[in-house]
Image (cartoon, one colour):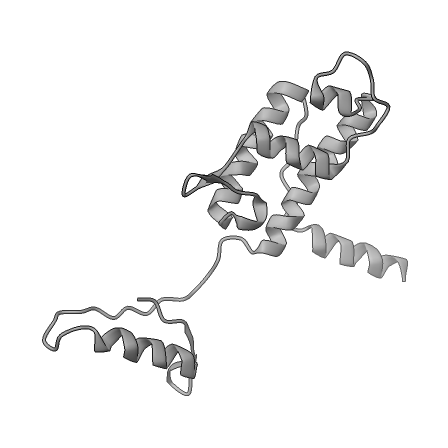
Length: 157
């Protein structure tokens, strides 16, 4: 069982709900059983905000490549006659889910249901697919993009 809390007043503080869950968990274990307790700092490798920014960059790059090459939905659908309808980010995203599917418990899932690790693996698969099939190079996101944007905005002021 994992308990999440914060260090405060020299100790480990948890919410009342976490305390209740811990008591419930321990009540099901016989006295005398060997257990461990471990403390570690909680850090996520990527936040969902970062994942959204990365995917925004990927889809925007692909969408722009399609526009630059005048590829419409007929290109995704592999139809000989042009449809005249440009490909939207949503259509590209749906197509990528079809050609680079991610499964969990035997069911296909979308980005909103993926773990951050799954989203990273899917990003690699999509990047490889886009490079090999569409000749699109999706650049790695600049980790300092926000700082640069703030600096640029400050210079305008």
